[in-house]
Image (cartoon, rainbow, N blue to C red; front, side):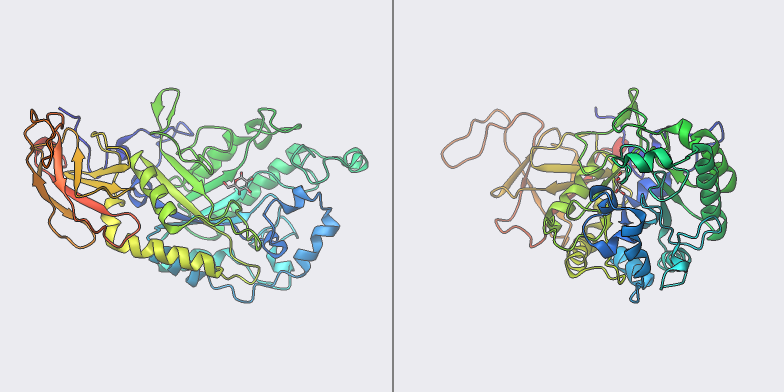
Length: 450
Ligand code: GLC
């Protein structure tokens, strides 16, 4: 007998790793929503060739200043971003308040390197937060621990001036000074804009992946997390401060199964790009198709994870046409198939190759990544399904009885292992990127509990 899936899904009951001795925040919204939008936007959007441009091209502050001097996103309309996110089926949005270049999108009292000193002259974070709330979306902020502009951030292997001997020798950089700045800025973010639901810190590298690597001691992560819990105890924090967070963050790959830490299941969220770059990258045409992105979303949910899908608005503040188009296609799919994603998690049943199962209580969703000829064989489900339908149009899908002992004959199917449920599906694949069959499970102990 397969184990009972919890309601709304098996994974919300997974214990999250905790950050502080205080009560762990409620993660229900996160595992219910499943799908969020990441927004990488800042000075690098003007360079339009990847958000690491300052590092990659070893640009000095003076060279990079040109983007600051021309930052004037005249078409900034966060209501449009929030609307696009909601229409795509996303339920939370995470904006880069500060990225590695150190530029702040809000009117921080702790630096002059901020949007209010650019030609734009106005805070961007406040209107973003309001727009999200107006759309009923949860609010997330990204904050870079790395800072290539702050004078006290010790130069390391990630720094644009890493090879400049003179620069390195001249700099009198005390990480404790930077630490105060970072803690102060996080405090600002959590006290200036009302409720924040989610924080994405980026990132720790004390492991030697870069010389001069930095981690929890450099950021004073224990104190940072304590302050966060004090100011907004409900906020979910990622795992990149170098201490365990409320969820882990696989980046630009799909985990091969539910994620664990020290053998214990953990909540996870894959962050993914549309074209390999986070910031607007004009000449990069490595676009993922809507069909692939939907499969990535479904694949993640089938393994108990979320998808945080990135967009990189232009320097004027627009989502570019490719982004709008792909979000539109995802939205059309989500509109018809939302219930196979929202509130769903892994199923205790094992899906056949080219299928992914998600489950919520007594509903099992079969996502078909490939469309077979007329029959779909589902191991272990015979006698457990009281009704089956295509989700896109609620058209009935019938069950075919095949005697398990019968071999396959010239014109008759056979050779299926005992316990296999065979569904008869139309020859025409529904005109949607990922067709879904909704199964109503029959066994009472597979219904939602309580
Ligand atoms: C990486 C990159 C960064 C991006 C982030 C998103 O850590 O440094 O540019 O913001 O991934 O997860």
